[in-house]
Image (cartoon, rainbow, N blue to C red; front, side):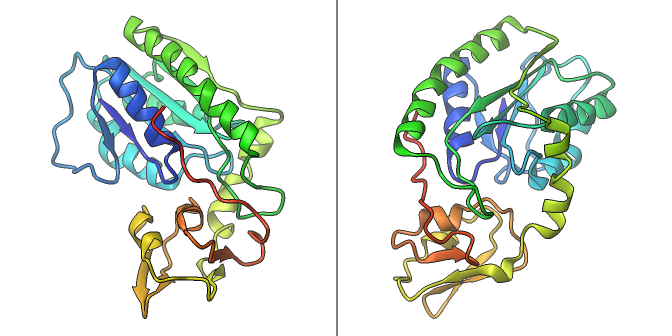
Length: 254
């Protein structure tokens, strides 16, 4: 069983690819029910998610602690994959610590998979060029095939994560980002909005509602940028930070 969180589609595409390769099911953690039974003890469990500001998205942390880890015995094969635009920082080490604290031993294998950049909410962050995006998506299946082979082997003690330079320093930014880096009052919509409601329908946090055919943001935001990227008229902006930046249309099935 593969549990995943995805907003702009990168992790969902990777999770479905791995599920198809491994002959397993992929379950969106936002659609998972606490009453749903976990798979049998002989079936491995994987957790997949995107990296946010070199950290683990809070919604994933909540799922791990409230649903998954306390129900997974120490003997079960447990693996994890993060998707990131370039580097993961120490996020997967933090995941390993949470796993060890909950079940007495670390995850069996952890990987990162490079996918197109989607974060646009701060200066200096933008989507990739068309050429870079294409190259990343072309390389992803080979990476996922290699990961699937190791999972089938039940390989243990693997930590194959691109942390990047100064990973601890980068990941140390995440707590501040989580607390102050997202201001839902800064989301705006211009007169280019056509009232299609796509942004409200794709928001994984259910943070958007439509009023008078225009989106209204609530207080809960995952900082996933899904609303920004899905807008067909590029009418959504985050303060002035997204001015002149591109949108990511999401991957085709890998």
